[in-house]
Structures are given as structure tokens and as C-alpha cells.
Length: 366
Image (cartoon, rainbow, N blue to C red; front, side, top):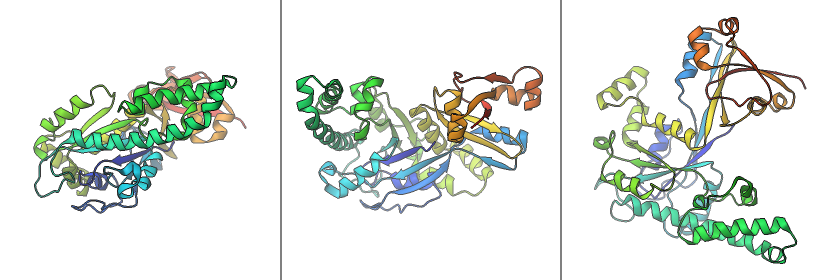
């Protein structure tokens, strides 16, 4: 399943530098606003040590990791919701994303101009939040007008539910909060799905720090943590410039040596992608055979037929059963045959909820 994360933030906070080290595509990184006009899109592989382990054991012809699309969206400014700084175009790019990576500048450097004159990540966050909230409010109010008369008559129950849900979101937005704060019930979400609200998307705050703060953060990170403590959002500390240097190294050994020198266990971009998975409540299952070892992304809670449908819709339509081994059993015992021999290969039906790391084969008939 496709996953698309949009990198957002004010100009000159490190978005394009982060994108460069995430993707093979190279965005222009320059010390002035609006360097990025059209969104750069890069496809990156999701780091997963389990896939490598399975491949080492099975020795397949092909190894296929799961991927994430990263979209580098141009820096937003005050007034973006009204079209300032090509705001309407940029906000439209955000609508297409599943989650937002909100980059906040958390470092001092007189050589890198800040669009508002000084470093203040909480202020920067609030500027972006406000612009996204205003755009969402515009969308909500426009839809409310269409349903207001029907809702007041009370005869059309769907119209009443739609209007009630929209009113709940409108009140939250007008209070200066994002739509995420409306705490909607699952059965209310269909009434707003067509709006593709910007502030209902999961968000991760990426604190871009200097090298000295790469491990433990700094005073700017501390104030960000305090500001977002009630948002149920992910926070990640990263040094975009250093990550760019790591990405430019050619061999795995060179990268490991660099990380060891910096006292880090893995590149920050690996943690970012893993955190994005957590943010979107995603998980991975594997198929493993001599032709191919492959990772597949699914929503947490998917049942076996839904997981099969990620491979091909025919697999879901004609689902008969799934043969399932846990990753730990497979790697401990050494093979599918060994799992089968000791009863660790299970036959599961349509109600089976897939676990992260399951190694699966599907039987189907169309």
C-alpha cells in the first residue's frame, strides 16, 4: 500500500536538506525562501533488519523492501491560507499526503537566514498550524452551508449527522486547535472524508538540531516537547546536515564508522521512517520464497484476507486460508520446513488478525 509523507515547515528550516538525505532525488538546498516551488517526490526503502535476515536465510533471486514516498513541500509563510507565497498550491500538495513531517529549526546559525529574523520553533509551529487550520475552517464552513437547511429540518438523518460532525470540528478549529483535537468517533470520519482536512493528518515534529545536540537535544527541543505534549504527536531529533553527510557516504562500513564516531547507533533517517510507520499505525508482514523475499505494508488490525489483498485484489476475493509462521519461529528454526515439522506453521482463516513480522503464504481461488 502506498504511503506518502509530506515534509512541511517555514522556509529555511532544513526541509530540502532532510529530503536530500532521505531520497535519491536531489532537491536544491539553498539559503533563501521558496527554493522549492514544485514538490520534489522521492521514493525510499523502509529500513527493516528482519527483511535482510530472511534474505540471508532463504537466498532468494530478488529482495523487495517496502517503500515510502516523501514529498518536499515548499516553505509555507503567514497568509498561505489566503494564497500568500503560492500558499494555495502548497496546501493542495499537503492534501495528498497521509502524514506530515513538520520540520522545526532548533539550531542557531547566523549564516542561515531565518525568515522571521530569529530562532523560535514554537512560534514557527504556530504559524504553520494557523495557516493549516484556517484552510480547514474554510473547507468545513463551505460544506456546512450545503447541509445547514437539511440538518435544521431534522428529516434527513445523514444530513444531521454530517452537520453535527462538521460543527464539532468547526468549534475545535475556531479555538485555535487542529482538527485532530476533535477526537472524532470512527463512525463520524466518513462525513468529513471528502474534505481531506490538513490538520486531521497525523503529524511528526522533526526537530532539526546542530551536531552537538544530535543525541540529547537542546533548549529549543525542550520547548517544542512542552508545546506539543497534549497533541499525541511523535517527536524526532535529527541533524539534517549530518544526515546528508551520512547519506553521501558510499559504503555501509563507512556509514557505520561515521555513526560510531558521532556516538549514534543508526542514521536518524532510519528512525524517522520507523516513526512514520508508528505514526500511521502501520506494520509489516513478509512473504519468503526462493524467487522473492518481500516486505508488505498493512494497517495494524488487518485480517488475513485484507493483507492478501495488498498483494493482489484477487487474493482477497478468493481467499481460502493463510499459512502463517512468526518471524521469530522462522529465524530460530531456520526454514519453513522446520517450522512445519514442529507445528509452528499455522493454518489461519478469514478472521485471523495479522501480526507484525508474520511470514505468510496465501491460498486462494478465483
